[in-house]
Length: 108
Image (cartoon, rainbow, N blue to C red; front, top):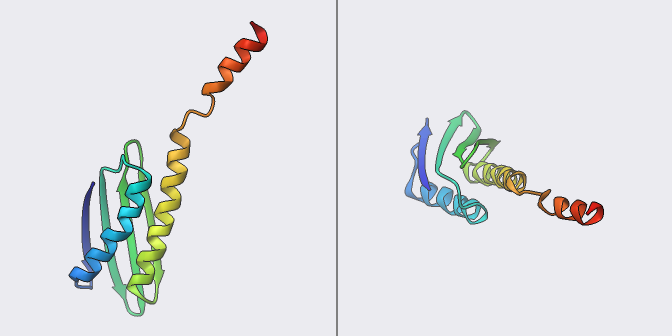
């Protein structure tokens, strides 16, 4: 997984970079087919915004969050991404695989 972190109106410090990477590792553990992640950190007046675009195997997932602290916005954004990844992973499962065998046994 390739992670690109950029900042608008904010310097991305090594501490922020490491914090974002640690939060995204949790998401990568849930779903291994993540290809590319682009994170944009923005500061506008008193609002700190974190947004991320994740290129997965078959879909692009997007999440953003606004908070009064940059670390809080990164936390909220990673939680949103985590929920989306779990939902995407569930959709990829074949839930009807066992149903055909049951129908064949009943009607066979």
